[in-house]
Length: 377
Image 1: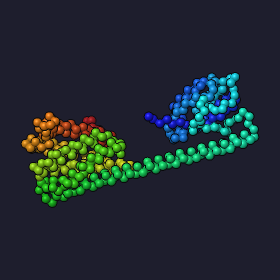
Image 2: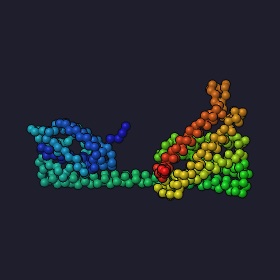
Image 3: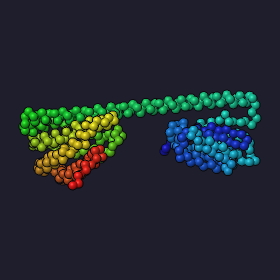
Image 4: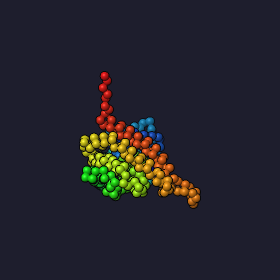
Protein backbone atom coordinates (compact mmCIF):
# COMPACT_ATOMS: atom_id res chain seq x y z
CA UNK A 1 0.00 0.00 0.00
CA UNK A 2 1.39 3.42 -0.95
CA UNK A 3 2.49 5.75 1.86
CA UNK A 4 0.22 8.76 2.45
CA UNK A 5 2.21 11.95 3.08
CA UNK A 6 0.51 14.76 4.98
CA UNK A 7 1.64 18.40 4.81
CA UNK A 8 2.25 20.50 7.90
CA UNK A 9 -0.84 22.65 8.48
CA UNK A 10 -0.89 25.74 10.70
CA UNK A 11 -4.25 27.07 11.86
CA UNK A 12 -5.62 30.07 13.72
CA UNK A 13 -9.07 31.48 14.44
CA UNK A 14 -11.16 34.35 15.66
CA UNK A 15 -14.89 34.36 16.34
CA UNK A 16 -15.81 34.59 12.65
CA UNK A 17 -13.04 32.82 10.75
CA UNK A 18 -10.70 29.86 10.58
CA UNK A 19 -7.30 30.45 8.97
CA UNK A 20 -5.39 27.44 7.58
CA UNK A 21 -1.96 27.49 5.95
CA UNK A 22 -0.63 24.34 4.20
CA UNK A 23 3.17 24.46 4.14
CA UNK A 24 3.66 23.29 0.56
CA UNK A 25 5.71 25.08 -2.09
CA UNK A 26 5.37 24.86 -5.87
CA UNK A 27 2.08 22.98 -5.64
CA UNK A 28 1.04 21.19 -8.82
CA UNK A 29 -2.28 19.54 -9.73
CA UNK A 30 -4.14 20.64 -6.55
CA UNK A 31 -7.50 19.01 -5.88
CA UNK A 32 -9.57 20.77 -3.20
CA UNK A 33 -12.97 19.74 -1.87
CA UNK A 34 -14.58 21.92 0.83
CA UNK A 35 -17.95 21.01 2.35
CA UNK A 36 -19.71 22.28 5.44
CA UNK A 37 -18.08 19.60 7.60
CA UNK A 38 -14.93 18.59 5.76
CA UNK A 39 -11.86 19.77 3.85
CA UNK A 40 -10.00 17.41 1.51
CA UNK A 41 -6.78 18.50 -0.19
CA UNK A 42 -4.50 16.59 -2.54
CA UNK A 43 -1.57 17.87 -4.59
CA UNK A 44 2.05 17.39 -5.58
CA UNK A 45 4.56 19.78 -4.05
CA UNK A 46 7.58 20.26 -1.82
CA UNK A 47 6.71 19.81 1.84
CA UNK A 48 7.99 18.23 5.02
CA UNK A 49 8.87 14.99 3.20
CA UNK A 50 10.38 16.59 0.10
CA UNK A 51 8.89 16.35 -3.39
CA UNK A 52 5.87 14.10 -2.85
CA UNK A 53 2.16 13.69 -3.42
CA UNK A 54 0.43 15.05 -0.28
CA UNK A 55 -3.08 14.33 0.97
CA UNK A 56 -5.03 15.56 3.98
CA UNK A 57 -8.62 15.01 5.13
CA UNK A 58 -9.97 17.34 7.87
CA UNK A 59 -13.31 16.91 9.65
CA UNK A 60 -14.23 20.24 11.27
CA UNK A 61 -15.29 20.67 14.88
CA UNK A 62 -18.47 22.44 13.70
CA UNK A 63 -20.06 23.18 10.32
CA UNK A 64 -18.63 26.04 8.24
CA UNK A 65 -20.01 28.40 5.62
CA UNK A 66 -18.69 27.12 2.29
CA UNK A 67 -20.05 29.99 0.16
CA UNK A 68 -18.21 32.65 2.19
CA UNK A 69 -14.93 30.71 2.37
CA UNK A 70 -11.97 31.23 0.02
CA UNK A 71 -8.59 29.71 -0.71
CA UNK A 72 -5.42 30.67 -2.61
CA UNK A 73 -2.71 28.41 -4.05
CA UNK A 74 0.48 30.47 -3.76
CA UNK A 75 4.09 29.72 -4.63
CA UNK A 76 5.15 29.09 -1.03
CA UNK A 77 1.95 27.79 0.58
CA UNK A 78 -1.78 27.21 0.24
CA UNK A 79 -4.04 29.50 2.31
CA UNK A 80 -7.63 28.93 3.39
CA UNK A 81 -9.99 31.51 4.95
CA UNK A 82 -12.99 29.50 6.14
CA UNK A 83 -16.03 31.28 7.52
CA UNK A 84 -17.86 29.99 10.54
CA UNK A 85 -21.62 29.60 10.19
CA UNK A 86 -23.53 32.79 10.94
CA UNK A 87 -25.22 32.61 14.36
CA UNK A 88 -22.70 30.06 15.62
CA UNK A 89 -19.66 32.32 15.58
CA UNK A 90 -17.64 31.46 18.64
CA UNK A 91 -14.19 30.27 19.55
CA UNK A 92 -13.69 26.58 18.93
CA UNK A 93 -11.77 24.45 21.45
CA UNK A 94 -10.09 22.78 18.48
CA UNK A 95 -10.12 22.54 14.70
CA UNK A 96 -10.98 18.89 14.40
CA UNK A 97 -14.08 16.99 15.30
CA UNK A 98 -12.12 14.49 17.36
CA UNK A 99 -10.11 15.46 20.42
CA UNK A 100 -6.78 13.92 19.35
CA UNK A 101 -4.43 16.43 17.70
CA UNK A 102 -2.31 14.94 14.89
CA UNK A 103 1.41 15.70 14.66
CA UNK A 104 1.04 17.51 11.32
CA UNK A 105 -1.41 20.10 12.74
CA UNK A 106 0.24 23.16 14.33
CA UNK A 107 -1.09 26.44 15.76
CA UNK A 108 -0.35 29.59 13.78
CA UNK A 109 0.48 31.82 16.75
CA UNK A 110 1.18 34.82 14.55
CA UNK A 111 -2.51 34.96 13.56
CA UNK A 112 -4.11 33.46 16.65
CA UNK A 113 -6.71 35.49 18.54
CA UNK A 114 -7.95 34.13 21.85
CA UNK A 115 -11.42 34.72 23.22
CA UNK A 116 -10.26 36.76 26.24
CA UNK A 117 -6.57 37.31 25.66
CA UNK A 118 -4.92 39.00 28.65
CA UNK A 119 -1.28 40.13 28.69
CA UNK A 120 -0.36 36.99 30.56
CA UNK A 121 -2.15 34.87 28.00
CA UNK A 122 -0.44 36.72 25.17
CA UNK A 123 2.94 36.15 26.78
CA UNK A 124 2.16 32.46 27.18
CA UNK A 125 1.11 32.28 23.55
CA UNK A 126 4.33 33.98 22.51
CA UNK A 127 6.32 31.43 24.53
CA UNK A 128 4.38 28.62 22.91
CA UNK A 129 5.03 30.18 19.53
CA UNK A 130 8.75 30.20 20.21
CA UNK A 131 8.59 26.53 21.18
CA UNK A 132 6.65 25.75 17.99
CA UNK A 133 9.19 27.61 15.88
CA UNK A 134 12.06 25.79 17.57
CA UNK A 135 10.37 22.42 17.01
CA UNK A 136 9.66 23.33 13.38
CA UNK A 137 13.30 24.31 12.89
CA UNK A 138 14.38 21.02 14.50
CA UNK A 139 12.07 19.07 12.18
CA UNK A 140 13.45 20.96 9.19
CA UNK A 141 17.04 20.20 10.25
CA UNK A 142 16.13 16.55 10.74
CA UNK A 143 14.60 16.39 7.28
CA UNK A 144 17.65 18.11 5.79
CA UNK A 145 19.87 15.55 7.52
CA UNK A 146 17.76 12.69 6.18
CA UNK A 147 17.95 14.17 2.69
CA UNK A 148 21.73 14.56 3.02
CA UNK A 149 22.07 10.92 4.14
CA UNK A 150 19.88 9.73 1.26
CA UNK A 151 21.93 11.85 -1.15
CA UNK A 152 25.17 10.39 0.21
CA UNK A 153 23.83 6.86 -0.19
CA UNK A 154 22.85 7.61 -3.79
CA UNK A 155 26.30 9.05 -4.50
CA UNK A 156 28.02 5.99 -3.00
CA UNK A 157 25.82 3.62 -5.02
CA UNK A 158 26.43 5.66 -8.17
CA UNK A 159 30.20 5.54 -7.59
CA UNK A 160 30.13 1.77 -6.99
CA UNK A 161 28.00 1.28 -10.11
CA UNK A 162 30.30 3.42 -12.29
CA UNK A 163 33.44 1.80 -10.85
CA UNK A 164 32.06 -1.70 -11.43
CA UNK A 165 30.98 -0.99 -15.02
CA UNK A 166 34.29 0.67 -15.92
CA UNK A 167 36.35 -2.18 -14.45
CA UNK A 168 34.18 -4.82 -16.13
CA UNK A 169 34.23 -3.19 -19.56
CA UNK A 170 37.94 -2.39 -19.48
CA UNK A 171 38.78 -5.91 -18.25
CA UNK A 172 36.77 -7.46 -21.08
CA UNK A 173 38.33 -5.07 -23.59
CA UNK A 174 41.84 -5.92 -22.35
CA UNK A 175 41.26 -9.68 -22.56
CA UNK A 176 39.77 -9.51 -26.05
CA UNK A 177 42.64 -7.25 -27.14
CA UNK A 178 45.03 -9.92 -25.84
CA UNK A 179 43.22 -12.55 -27.92
CA UNK A 180 43.48 -10.37 -31.05
CA UNK A 181 47.19 -9.79 -30.41
CA UNK A 182 47.89 -13.52 -29.94
CA UNK A 183 45.94 -14.57 -33.03
CA UNK A 184 47.43 -11.92 -35.33
CA UNK A 185 50.99 -12.36 -34.05
CA UNK A 186 50.82 -16.13 -34.54
CA UNK A 187 49.45 -15.57 -38.05
CA UNK A 188 52.32 -13.15 -38.76
CA UNK A 189 55.06 -15.50 -37.52
CA UNK A 190 53.59 -18.90 -38.44
CA UNK A 191 51.37 -18.16 -41.40
CA UNK A 192 48.43 -20.47 -42.00
CA UNK A 193 49.81 -22.95 -39.45
CA UNK A 194 48.37 -20.59 -36.83
CA UNK A 195 44.86 -21.69 -37.83
CA UNK A 196 45.28 -25.14 -36.30
CA UNK A 197 46.71 -23.78 -33.03
CA UNK A 198 44.17 -20.99 -32.44
CA UNK A 199 41.94 -23.05 -30.16
CA UNK A 200 44.76 -24.15 -27.88
CA UNK A 201 46.23 -20.63 -27.79
CA UNK A 202 43.21 -18.58 -26.71
CA UNK A 203 40.21 -20.81 -25.95
CA UNK A 204 40.68 -20.61 -22.16
CA UNK A 205 40.77 -16.79 -22.18
CA UNK A 206 37.85 -16.56 -24.58
CA UNK A 207 35.79 -18.97 -22.46
CA UNK A 208 36.45 -16.82 -19.37
CA UNK A 209 35.31 -13.71 -21.24
CA UNK A 210 32.12 -15.37 -22.46
CA UNK A 211 31.27 -16.65 -18.98
CA UNK A 212 31.82 -13.15 -17.58
CA UNK A 213 29.47 -11.82 -20.28
CA UNK A 214 26.58 -13.45 -18.38
CA UNK A 215 26.79 -10.33 -16.19
CA UNK A 216 25.45 -8.37 -19.17
CA UNK A 217 22.16 -10.24 -18.70
CA UNK A 218 22.15 -9.82 -14.92
CA UNK A 219 23.00 -6.08 -14.98
CA UNK A 220 19.74 -4.87 -16.59
CA UNK A 221 17.70 -7.25 -14.40
CA UNK A 222 19.20 -5.61 -11.29
CA UNK A 223 18.81 -2.13 -12.78
CA UNK A 224 22.57 -1.50 -12.93
CA UNK A 225 22.24 -0.50 -16.58
CA UNK A 226 19.17 0.98 -18.25
CA UNK A 227 18.90 -1.43 -21.17
CA UNK A 228 16.66 -4.30 -22.13
CA UNK A 229 17.31 -7.91 -21.17
CA UNK A 230 16.29 -9.66 -24.41
CA UNK A 231 19.11 -8.44 -26.70
CA UNK A 232 22.03 -9.23 -24.34
CA UNK A 233 20.43 -12.58 -23.45
CA UNK A 234 20.17 -13.58 -27.11
CA UNK A 235 23.78 -12.59 -27.81
CA UNK A 236 25.25 -14.22 -24.70
CA UNK A 237 23.15 -17.38 -25.08
CA UNK A 238 24.02 -17.74 -28.77
CA UNK A 239 27.77 -17.23 -28.33
CA UNK A 240 28.04 -19.47 -25.26
CA UNK A 241 26.07 -22.23 -26.96
CA UNK A 242 28.28 -22.12 -30.05
CA UNK A 243 31.48 -21.90 -27.99
CA UNK A 244 30.80 -24.52 -25.32
CA UNK A 245 28.31 -26.93 -26.92
CA UNK A 246 29.64 -26.82 -30.48
CA UNK A 247 33.33 -25.87 -30.52
CA UNK A 248 34.63 -26.95 -27.10
CA UNK A 249 32.57 -30.16 -27.08
CA UNK A 250 33.98 -31.43 -30.40
CA UNK A 251 37.71 -31.95 -30.74
CA UNK A 252 37.17 -32.61 -34.44
CA UNK A 253 36.53 -28.87 -34.90
CA UNK A 254 39.40 -27.47 -32.81
CA UNK A 255 42.01 -27.29 -35.56
CA UNK A 256 39.78 -25.97 -38.32
CA UNK A 257 40.54 -22.56 -39.80
CA UNK A 258 36.95 -21.43 -39.27
CA UNK A 259 37.55 -21.55 -35.47
CA UNK A 260 40.46 -19.11 -35.92
CA UNK A 261 38.20 -16.85 -37.97
CA UNK A 262 35.35 -16.96 -35.44
CA UNK A 263 37.60 -16.22 -32.45
CA UNK A 264 39.24 -13.31 -34.29
CA UNK A 265 35.95 -11.78 -35.46
CA UNK A 266 34.35 -12.04 -32.02
CA UNK A 267 37.36 -10.44 -30.40
CA UNK A 268 37.65 -7.59 -32.93
CA UNK A 269 34.00 -6.70 -32.32
CA UNK A 270 34.52 -6.58 -28.55
CA UNK A 271 37.76 -4.59 -28.77
CA UNK A 272 35.62 -1.69 -29.98
CA UNK A 273 32.40 -2.42 -28.09
CA UNK A 274 33.66 -2.61 -24.51
CA UNK A 275 35.77 0.61 -24.55
CA UNK A 276 32.77 2.34 -26.15
CA UNK A 277 30.57 1.20 -23.25
CA UNK A 278 33.19 2.35 -20.72
CA UNK A 279 33.26 5.81 -22.31
CA UNK A 280 29.45 5.94 -22.18
CA UNK A 281 29.50 5.23 -18.44
CA UNK A 282 31.62 8.33 -17.74
CA UNK A 283 29.85 10.41 -20.45
CA UNK A 284 33.07 10.84 -22.42
CA UNK A 285 32.80 11.29 -26.17
CA UNK A 286 35.74 9.73 -28.03
CA UNK A 287 34.99 10.21 -31.72
CA UNK A 288 37.42 7.55 -33.13
CA UNK A 289 35.92 5.03 -30.70
CA UNK A 290 32.38 6.00 -31.71
CA UNK A 291 33.31 5.62 -35.37
CA UNK A 292 34.76 2.14 -34.74
CA UNK A 293 31.66 1.08 -32.81
CA UNK A 294 29.32 2.13 -35.63
CA UNK A 295 31.55 0.98 -38.51
CA UNK A 296 33.42 -2.24 -37.60
CA UNK A 297 30.19 -4.23 -37.57
CA UNK A 298 29.81 -3.77 -41.33
CA UNK A 299 32.42 -6.41 -42.27
CA UNK A 300 32.56 -8.28 -38.93
CA UNK A 301 28.88 -9.12 -38.33
CA UNK A 302 28.42 -10.96 -41.66
CA UNK A 303 31.72 -12.79 -41.12
CA UNK A 304 30.72 -13.76 -37.60
CA UNK A 305 27.37 -15.12 -38.82
CA UNK A 306 29.15 -17.07 -41.58
CA UNK A 307 31.72 -18.60 -39.22
CA UNK A 308 29.11 -19.49 -36.55
CA UNK A 309 26.81 -21.03 -39.15
CA UNK A 310 29.67 -23.04 -40.67
CA UNK A 311 30.70 -24.50 -37.32
CA UNK A 312 27.11 -25.32 -36.37
CA UNK A 313 26.55 -27.01 -39.74
CA UNK A 314 29.71 -29.10 -39.35
CA UNK A 315 28.74 -30.08 -35.80
CA UNK A 316 25.30 -31.41 -36.75
CA UNK A 317 26.46 -34.77 -38.23
CA UNK A 318 28.81 -35.22 -35.26
CA UNK A 319 25.92 -34.69 -32.84
CA UNK A 320 23.63 -37.04 -34.78
CA UNK A 321 26.26 -39.73 -34.47
CA UNK A 322 27.13 -39.19 -30.80
CA UNK A 323 23.64 -38.04 -29.66
CA UNK A 324 25.42 -35.71 -27.25
CA UNK A 325 23.14 -33.22 -25.41
CA UNK A 326 20.09 -35.10 -26.74
CA UNK A 327 17.39 -36.95 -24.79
CA UNK A 328 16.05 -40.22 -26.12
CA UNK A 329 12.99 -42.29 -25.24
CA UNK A 330 12.19 -44.14 -23.12
CA UNK A 331 12.90 -42.08 -20.01
CA UNK A 332 11.16 -41.15 -16.78
CA UNK A 333 9.84 -37.89 -18.23
CA UNK A 334 8.54 -39.43 -21.49
CA UNK A 335 10.25 -36.63 -23.38
CA UNK A 336 12.73 -36.60 -26.27
CA UNK A 337 15.00 -33.85 -27.54
CA UNK A 338 17.44 -33.82 -30.45
CA UNK A 339 20.16 -31.22 -30.11
CA UNK A 340 21.15 -31.79 -33.75
CA UNK A 341 17.66 -30.78 -34.90
CA UNK A 342 17.70 -27.85 -32.51
CA UNK A 343 20.86 -26.61 -34.23
CA UNK A 344 19.13 -26.83 -37.60
CA UNK A 345 16.44 -24.52 -36.25
CA UNK A 346 19.12 -22.35 -34.69
CA UNK A 347 20.70 -21.82 -38.12
CA UNK A 348 17.49 -20.17 -39.29
CA UNK A 349 17.32 -18.09 -36.12
CA UNK A 350 20.98 -17.16 -36.53
CA UNK A 351 20.38 -15.73 -40.01
CA UNK A 352 17.19 -13.92 -38.95
CA UNK A 353 18.76 -12.59 -35.75
CA UNK A 354 21.91 -11.56 -37.58
CA UNK A 355 19.88 -9.64 -40.15
CA UNK A 356 17.95 -7.92 -37.37
CA UNK A 357 21.17 -6.93 -35.56
CA UNK A 358 22.75 -5.56 -38.74
CA UNK A 359 19.59 -3.58 -39.53
CA UNK A 360 19.60 -2.22 -35.97
CA UNK A 361 23.26 -1.18 -36.19
CA UNK A 362 22.64 0.40 -39.59
CA UNK A 363 19.84 2.54 -38.14
CA UNK A 364 22.10 3.61 -35.26
CA UNK A 365 24.88 4.50 -37.68
CA UNK A 366 22.50 6.54 -39.84
CA UNK A 367 21.34 8.45 -36.77
CA UNK A 368 24.94 9.22 -35.89
CA UNK A 369 26.39 9.99 -39.32
CA UNK A 370 23.37 10.39 -41.59
CA UNK A 371 22.61 8.64 -44.87
CA UNK A 372 24.88 8.98 -47.86
CA UNK A 373 23.06 10.86 -50.59
CA UNK A 374 23.22 9.38 -54.06
CA UNK A 375 24.25 11.67 -56.90
CA UNK A 376 21.60 12.11 -59.57
CA UNK A 377 23.02 12.30 -63.07
